[in-house]
Image (cartoon, rainbow, N blue to C red):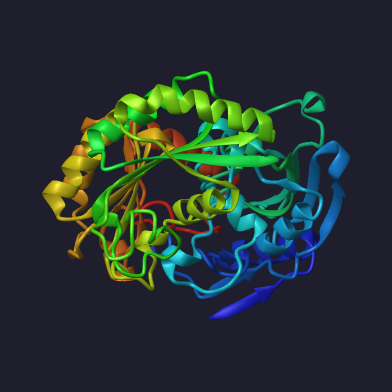
Length: 417
């Protein structure tokens, strides 16, 4: 395996142009923490962006940061945390789920586009990417967006680049929106609700005027040994049987959070007694939900494939309940039921046909986010697109990378050659 380290955008241009000339596809990596996600890539050449790790500009008063794509996400988060700021979309740390040690990069965060629990309020990664510098599959540098949204003209390519998994262009620098961290947070917790009732409770909370920033449900089967920060939530006392928990988060100014928590508790009283998790306990619980800690690679379900399912929130409870029943798997609900993480007992096909049949019937789509390389070689990792949409997607990719030099085959099975 040839690793091609680059120092700047000019180096990236040269590497891509050489790859075009030799017809050698490139796998784009930062720290390689997400290499186990997606269809396996058939190439012997790695384009390593880890040396592009500088913070180009940080303007806390303007709520923007410009950083090179290979910068470690944890380092950037530490920097903005020092100014009491955050990426409001709560980017997921996939290392716990995949078992790949290391620190993901800013470029990987945008390329994957995976947002955490606060997406229901703050939007996704694509909504926080203001601008980017990148190198296309032609070997040409281009710029999209800018530091001030109202000054931007032309096509909004930031939306295309986010979640493209490196198949359109090699991002070298990005400008992101940052937001103030909330002064306080509280989580309202209900116990022992079944999936359908929990779905209704989350819908009621999200439909209230109390500005909910997180709504999740963990069935009792989720609380297995070594479930980490969530282990104590499912039990009222040590040694007692685990119970399902439904969590609703409120954030903001302390006085406002306290007032809204009291009002929302009354709204949810018909679903059962409401318990309160204060700041530190609340934050720990939502980090664990964000990073899908119960399905960690080091845990009891570490060998099980994991599906990431997005569906209409109102359909989530019924869909998740049916999948758990029919596959023998475990599920976690986030986004008020609109996001389901499903860990299923190992099968050669990760039960893909059954999963996709149920998900499509519910109006959703599914991504196989964790599985062995053999399984990912034989199963469509990303949701197959209908014919006309697939053709449109291919035309867009071809307009950026006509020879499919960049991350060839990562999105579509059977396109590695």
